[in-house]
Amino acid sequence: MTLQNEITMTKSDSLETSRDETVNRVNALAAELKQWMETEPKLLSTNSEILLTVGKEELLQLNTQLEMVFSCSQAKRNKLKEVLKSEQKWLEEKREVLMAVTEQVTALQQENDKLSETSVLHDMKKKIQKVKEYQDHLLDTLSDVLEEHFPLPQQAGNTNKKKKLLMNKTVETPHEPYVVIDETFWPPYIEMLLRYGIASRHPDDYCRI
Image (cartoon, rainbow, N blue to C red; front, side, top):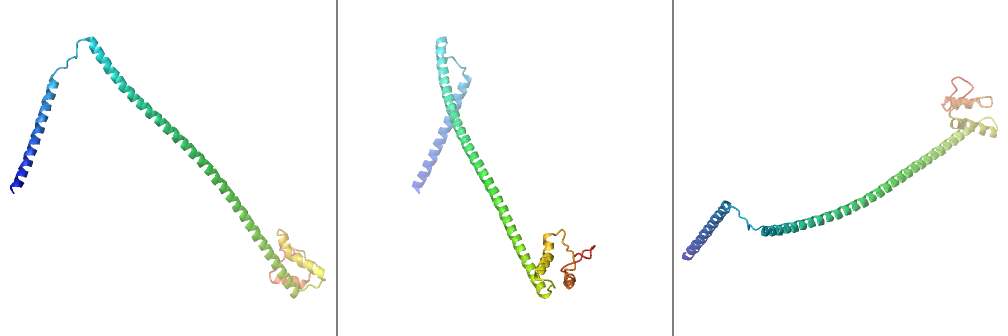
């Protein structure tokens, strides 16, 4: 217990001593500052040559310092110029790459559009061809049905001619799909076509279907 008290007292004494020294030092500095403020400045010498020499030395020292500052500024300026030049070169390279990529993308898009149009046209032609083939198949089937169930009382050559004429007229000349009916057409056959809606008469000409 005694040892702890001694340690505590020693710490307290040390803190008090340090605080006192700090206060004394501050007071001394304040007194010195006051003295300097109250003292009038005096020339180092009244001799003009000495003053000139001292002034020259100070100017030379100041000039040296300014030259060092200027040299550092120039070095920094040159470095910035190099960095700027490098950045401009990099920017120009990236701009050229961007232009090349843009041109390539445009070319690919045009080629893709062209291929798409060609593919669409090809598909349309295939579909049209299939429709034509299907139409020919239907016409042939209809021709066979008519020939089997409603044969014309003419010779075989004339029968095929009439059959082709009636079925192909609408397809070949859609703007003028009517056929003139004369005595060479078998009347029951014409009547059957009209009755079942396969053919219709011209609204102004009874002899045309």
